Length: 556
Image (cartoon, rainbow, N blue to C red; front, side):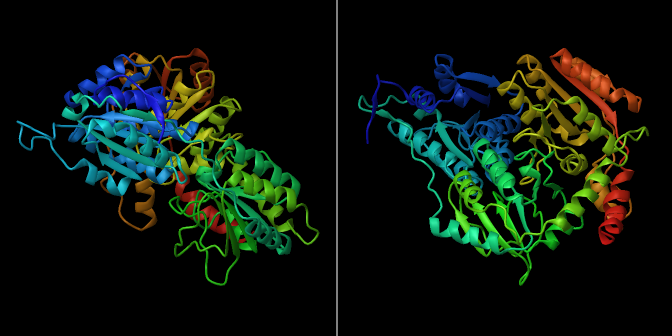
């Protein structure tokens, strides 16, 4: 092993040096007394510390950094309750394939005078939620553990890693020969020619092939390769929720988003297909469709092999770098005379007609279709929306056309409430020249609403749209679907305008449907942090998803 020799440092200092060596520029944190040596090392480093108001939000921001950049995002907490507050963010990154490192503090492990006060086995706690979790028990091992953690966090499938730095190890002096390991330049392996040729053969032999785009394809190189494949083969495509925007959804071959697992227009196309080319799908995402024995064939194109699941068991797998695999298919699977896409185009016409309905509806409180339409109208082509989790997420997944990859940030893996605002804050930090909007329900917003102060303190340009029904709206919809009495899911909210202003943000309340668009336009143009509170009428949930879709798709 080779590395760069450095001067005599303590454990915290060499940890920070190792992070700098990995290219870390920012750490999101809620520090405690066990982190003070680490904090002092940060103070003298090139790394920026972003102080959050809750560890969960710090973790969400670090995970979103990993999602948007492909590099490892880093967050920091103290021991005990600080570390347990990172658990949801760990699961968010792990299920969502976002490279993220968590660093937690701990009491001294060689001698302690506080008994078991605040002490939990955090390493064991993190084990099922991470790719790698270790306690550092010797300062000399810090560089190796940091390098290994970064390697595993970044490798396909990316995810969460965790290192615990006890207080005495942070202060412990390293040996003079302790050195930092340089990051590896290893490249992802490519799929075998044999598997690629078989995929091409299956595509050429199919009568009604269809492309599905999942979360693993939401990267620039993959996006370019998929556009090439669609344009050269003319094969229509649809997306999962986390695959939105990989190919511009204004493309004439785009059939829609599988926001539901069954019963939508796009499932009419899926049912008609005899082959689905499944690019970047991961079974942790809510199933976009269900496979059945003896049904259509599926080609799995991904960085890693398919996890066999009762509703997903592809007949052929192309395992390797997705961009290279898709580019090969584009070069070798051009238009085929035996392909027939006429049925798919009928579905597309029905989808387009359905999504256009009621998008200018003047009712107030506003219906979801109008809210989605108005947001799309005010957001520029490269504008980024970050969705929290709630009923509106289904409406945005189906009705909001995405024009570029990673311009619609939503989570369909862990699907945690509370992630929308921190995710949008991270996007605003990374891309200060782009318009960014967090879209939250009132329930999800309140789970990390304190981060408004962080956003204001950081000087971010950010609009937060709160879709307000004073209830846990998606669960109310499910409650009604299952025939239960409306019970136990309503609450009262604060005055969101005053709440925003108390943090130094700008608050706006929409009281007429025609005011939403100009309010959003003005907020996006003004800069700074703006909160816009709009009441929603969710009666459309039942009408569209429970009644209209069943009738229209049966007749298609």
